[in-house]
Length: 117
Length: 112
Image (cartoon, each protein chain N blue to C red):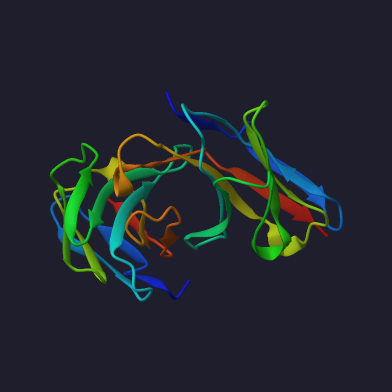
């Protein structure tokens, strides 16, 4: 079965330090992987995605993620965290069964990132 | 975030009320989605409309009734809800066959 795991409920880092938010997945076939961010009282905002090609994907707000096929991981990273990065981060994988919009996104439970000044 | 708007942002209703949630997208997309977000649970896909036709209904109770009058508007009609239906309801849109979805800010629903 397709699944996504975000093993950490919460990540805390100091401002200016590098951050990593972890995501592992289980899919049949080649995965389409996504990261979204949710700020308080807001909807989800798309950060970045991996479809194919270069394993290092760069996205919005200075975030990047590395696709690692052997470890089935897609960790989100940023070299220097900002207090404004504090939010809820969701990893998702595309279920490649079916066609078009029948291919659902399977979501992780989310990781709360707290960046301390 | 202004690409997808949702109204109202907050809604409190009794179990016998009838209300509707509205979503509008200004991105020229032709697929729209309703999700339910509850604490400690993965995001739940409720309904998918593609080119104004419903293509997905994930065993959602009949007390939730979607409507998509055109590619820019999506409604979720609510009646006889239960307290466990209290959640954040998110609308999203995308191009058909595209992989990236764009979300609205959500409606925080409380059922008393």
